[in-house]
Image (cartoon, rainbow, N blue to C red; front, side, top):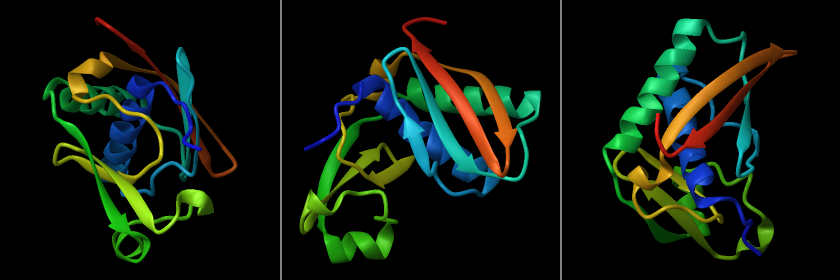
Length: 147
């Protein structure tokens, strides 16, 4: 059964993950806690983010949101998806066909959750705090309709 994340928050999490990968050459979050008001992503990392990095992550995520990119899905066999993506976070009951969610040309990721149709539906991304402890960077964010 698919998780029932808020589509706006879940789509923002995908963009945040790809932004972290591109900026810091790290892996996507190893776990997330997505809620309708505030959410958290946890990354294996070697330090906390500097204030200017926090601002840059936030700016880049919002830049992608403002492109109004389409959010679409495609289905690949588990074997084909496994050659392109890390499938370790997908539940086994997903079956032989794996759903890939694509956000414009910016991100592609196996996913079972709900998403917006276009990125502008997300609103404004606010990265309001980060903390670092024992090799884990916790990134906290929320969304609003306007800045």
